[in-house]
Image 1: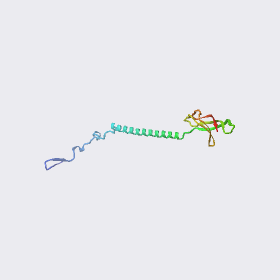
Image 2 (image 1 turned 90 degrees about the vertical axis):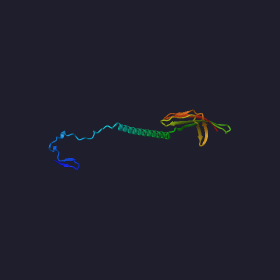
Image 3 (image 1 turned 30 degrees about the vertical axis):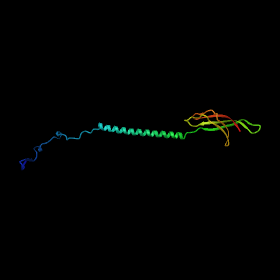
Length: 170
């Protein structure tokens, strides 16, 4: 081993250490420091962030689903009212049981019996008419009109028959 002296009187030893020829047991050596073990569970702060994010996403999904349900309901309601089926009226019979002509021929009196059907094809709505006016026309001229007709109420998917009597003066 050599010893070198410095200018200021310091010495340093240069050479091979004494234990170089000795053998070491590898198992006895202290293990090298390693990284801390991997934590698989999120920390409390991470859990709060994840739950806040999940809550926000769930809230947005709930708002989207509620909006979609509202729009679909309004659309179906509008379509239902636009395409609803109105009641159908059909003339079944017209008869004149009493027909009188005055002796001068200036006045004609007739009693009319008008039979008609009212059909409601709508499976949901009931229709009613409080004071219907039944009119009898010949071509484009009014012959007779019945204003004191009873209330007409038609339930869902039903057909009813009515007969009205009126007197025509001409």
